[in-house]
Image (tube, rainbow, N blue to C red; front, side, top):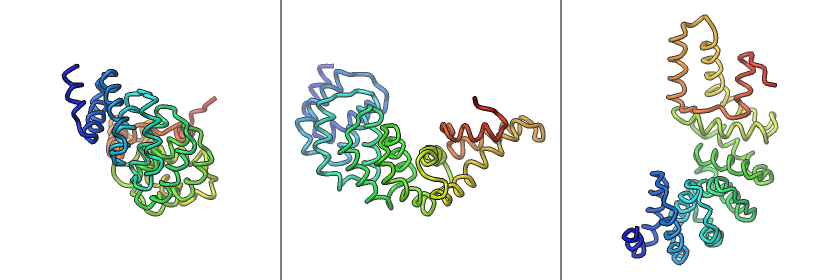
Length: 249
């Protein structure tokens, strides 16, 4: 509305980023308003910190609004400042590029290099969406640069308990396609023990007759809820179906 745009014209740069993030988070469809925010933000980009930039990238990607002038300006403004981006900011920015199908190899290379420098502070979430994004964008060379150390970080440092299943499966599916089995042995052992084997055994109970169906179904639903596993991904869906005796043609 005209009233909303009038208020936006008086906003501080961080307020603009927060507003765009909130609109996207709530799923509100208002392209004219987002275009107005973009026009204001472009003039103020030198004032944005990494959080503001990554939130703006995320907001437009979440709404699938490919506002070319804003995205180009943000890429240019960020390139010299990526050393100040946290692991999460880098991962969210890469995810935004993948969501919008934007392939800017120099910028993605800078993000990947920054992620390698910040590997020790990276969480399951950060690395899973980063490598997923590079995979979606067919950045095989960049994946080859980050995956070996990221695989070791997952195997040696990152938590495998609680509600991190989705991140492990996302990461594991990319790893299975790009990292040789010998190089990922430690990662696979941890992933199989903590995630894949419980999924397979619970599904085997659900598809068999030894455990009452209601009990097996409860166990399956509890596993999915507690470990937050909404899907298995393309590679491990095939692996699990094969274990269940399902032939994929």
